[in-house]
Image (cartoon, rainbow, N blue to C red; front, side, top):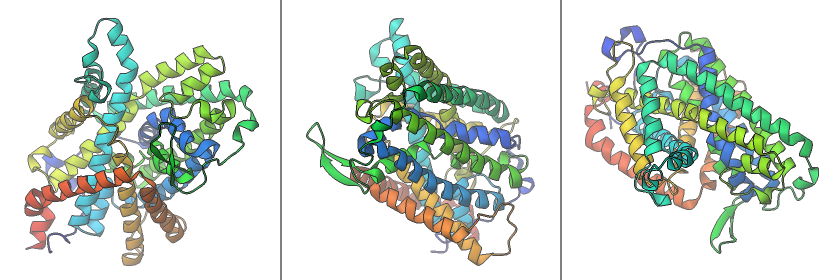
Length: 474
């Protein structure tokens, strides 16, 4: 019990061993770009169609609900990140405030989130690259995931290797390239809104909420039960908003964490909420939701349906160019979570060594192997929603930590203070709990099973070797 309840002490970077010390090289523009790069990606490009199938025109309400919950969690993240400018995000905050066992659960949730997002986005990117490769004679069995009839998804593995190479070469250089690609992605969405606005028809919003508000089951067109409702859509659309938590993992590599982390987290959320609401309204106004519901490429489909094929091609090309920004942001977050857990002894400490350039090469390579295996060989259709469950768990933990410290250490220095902390915290916690409830039941079952596996690993390895646990036992 002493080990399970052991709390981590946050150590200043200058007091760490040189081989475990990350190099600060990022400023707030890099962090905003990292957050926007993670948030604006496959979610807005694909989930409007999925959300419309579950909520109809009220998918706009689903976006706003998910955005409000994420914004409340983002404020809690900003306060905790400036109080504890250490790498590890929600895992580190939980370890320092609550204890080791809960921190392991949160860290394992983050590993699930980042691994599945990186793998899923890599598979999505390969979908755009596949036609080009097959046109030059590349075998079909090597360009599709097993769930689509292939053997190994080589393009997905390729893009993961490229992103891993960028991170190994240097974080600052990777962040600069990421910022440029984020501008390409934003420009494409601005073009979408500008092109579709002349076709806006308010009649497409009537009836506004055809499937009701709470999650409930209906029989779909294929004769199978389907979960619909505004909240059912919000629980899936939530995927399109998170990503700002990757910024918190950059705390030790930020030049001025007390200022820049809050700007990066809150700034990226504000930018993305505005973009999403504008794109969702323009999409539904331009075309009746039933015509693009469940489409894997809803925005491009809408542009083709309104007679704008060139704009559709431009959007598709922009997606190919810019989707790697999502992979980079989440890959970065995944490698840093692995790095910190290894530095804490919960995973093999040999992985937590940095190179002469200050980059954790071993853990980056290890992370690349894990996510490349998922992207190349594992069907992701039944597992992708696990990323949402893992993120919601982390958001709840960070908000609880913020509220605990408001009571435990009310006078502690806070470079950023969450306004109306208790109301905001309650909105974040209850909202995340309701979204967890609104996820598909099979996702909830998979999530429990994944954490059973994680606890087995913790008790078999981490609980015996953790640095904080050994210190707690004296």
